[in-house]
Image (cartoon, rainbow, N blue to C red):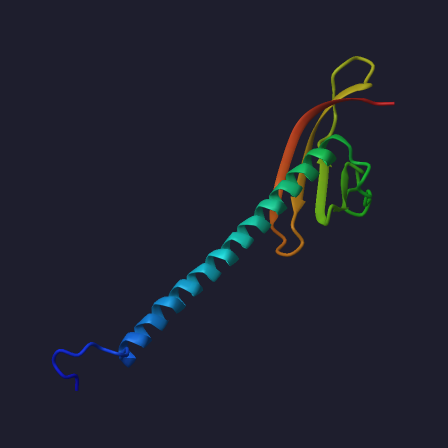
Length: 132
């Protein structure tokens, strides 16, 4: 018991436990926000790499290996690029001139993340090609 007129020299057990609880909640929240930030950073990096890869393959499919088993027409090109699975397909050509050498095709590129198999980027474009 405290005598009147004397100051307190110590904290009670309840005050110490309350302080530890508040400190623990603050540290847990800081750790959770750091992990959430890392997750967002990883996701943004995957989307950025996916879009850069999609735009590159949209214009030039040569970095990918053509798999004839996936497309009998040979218009599909698939493979790994930048650690991502890339699928590039072209529609059947539409002849634009009388000689049949100038054609229009629609090119579609889908890029998938290997860890979850999710589509991280897609791009499509109508292109004019000159056939040999």
